[in-house]
Length: 125
Image 1 (spheres, helix red, strand yellow):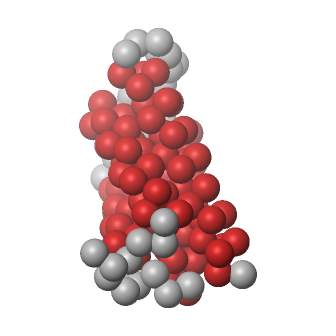
Image 2: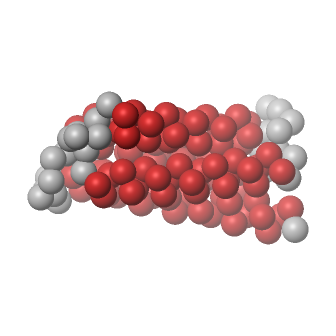
């Protein structure tokens, strides 16, 4: 069960990361111009976190001990930015951005729980 759970979590992390990189890069390069207000820092954040998600996904796949810390960091970062969007930027952020951030936050909390549950807490560095 551990092997399947961690491989599924790793695969989801890789897909989420790739999606964030592709979507954000399309906006940054001008290939996609949304019909709503774009917060430039949020687009850069999403691309950056997409790269971090790919790294985390690879570490989870390899069952590396650092996967625990990195998945904790990613989940916490998404929750923090979601909180900022809801509290500070709620009047300017697009509803789609809120939904995407909720989706990423929930997915990363689940990934973190899987990583924590199946014992990837130990440092294997």
